[in-house]
Image (cartoon, rainbow, N blue to C red; front, top):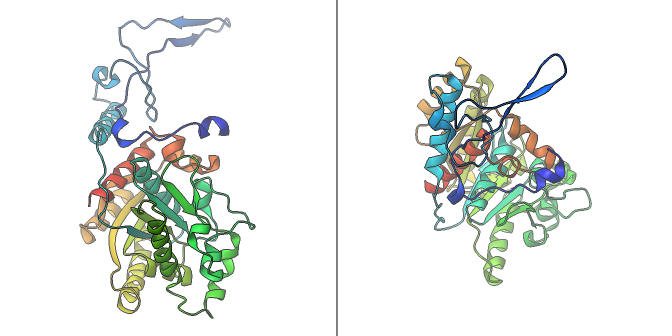
Amino acid sequence: MTSSEASTQRIPPFVSLGSARAFVAPAITHDYSGNHTAAVAKTAGMASVSRETSVASSGNVLDSIDDSSPIARELAHENKRRERLLGRELPKPEKTRIFTVSNQKGGVGKTTTTVNIAAALAAAGLNVLVIDIDPQGNASTALGIEHHADVDSIYDVLINDIPLQDVVAPCPDIDKLICAPATIHLAGAEIELVSLVAREQRLRRAIDVYAKERAKNGEERLDYIFIDCPPSLGLLTVNAFCAANEVLIPIQCEYYALEGLSQLLKNIEMIQKHLNADLVVSTILLTMYDGRTNLAAQVAAEVREHFPEQVLGAVVPRSVRISEAPSYQQTVMTYDPSSSGALSYLEAAAEIAER
């Protein structure tokens, strides 16, 4: 897929998510004499279907598949999951829900989770803001937002008191999704924040002012704000905790992720005690799940045992499509809406909205 082809794709809204459908095509065979022949399907309705991609046709391929094979069973399972989302409308929250997406361990899927859940909610018609406070700026990249050194960014909001409304930019692929980008200047913000007044509350105040400005200008209220944090517990992350009322923790299904979780919860407890009493850990999402390994199943079971109310039913699998999407400056929701990774994030977004 070229960049131009990828940019033309758009996420289907929840109301148009369909089940996997058959793609009928002749099978191409090759003999050693160099001749290519097209073999005609012997049985009407015989289909070639991709595990990751569904293509429109008149019949359902799953009706003619023997579900005794593992691939067929997985296709049938994905089909049922899609049908559960078909026609579902996500409710608007009574007030703006502000999530900090945090885990001090790197590589657990914080940014991927932030942008894809935000994209899924925006595609369902909700107003969503993503605030990127990670100096790497990966969330800005995934949403197609410019974040080079000359762009006004969340750094200017925190350090130079620029209004948030002057920084946010619309996502080119998805309506109702906007982003406050991060630039490399954020790398030094931790040091610069130390000497500033009310250093822990600066992001919260910027969000409050922005919400009032939107209301004053007659704009729709934001339904969700997602703050993508760096993999650390410094002042940038503390600002995110003070600005939010909910914490979303992505956990990679490996042992090290469990080890880091206890330290993260201790830090959140300190924030609750001293800076933001309203902060709660409301959501835990299991990511990079590999169903072929016993370790992933054991980690998932242990997390669910300790946090039965917080862990989402949706589990995000390891997916090549999820990894490929940022290279096209897109989320997986627009890069490949029919992939298993996009389906998992749609389910996660629906769970969050209906809680």
